[in-house]
Length: 125
Image (cartoon, rainbow, N blue to C red):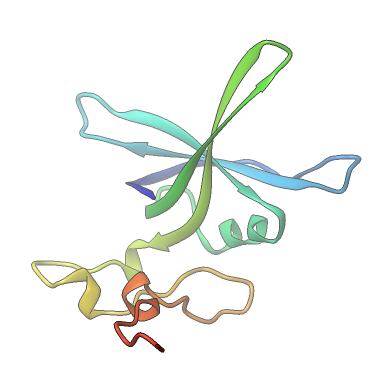
């Protein structure tokens, strides 16, 4: 799991392929003013609509996985986004990020549980 924070620079249109697969790409600008980095991420399948909740210039935190593959002797890397948090949902100041439940942009509109909510020390045997 990786995380990047920056400003939303570009939202691309959703692409639909003949196989029925859909993806949507977007770019955030990270880093300071002297050395900004533009990083492209992708959303796949039903997650493509998540980006509709955000505007260009908005601060985002993106959680993602790195995916790599080979095709015809060429290697490709994709940053596959699985969670987006807007600035309105991010913590400010010195609070513990795990003490608040940030809202995730989802189709259902419900907050996704944090990893801490999913871990249980109760062993059933």
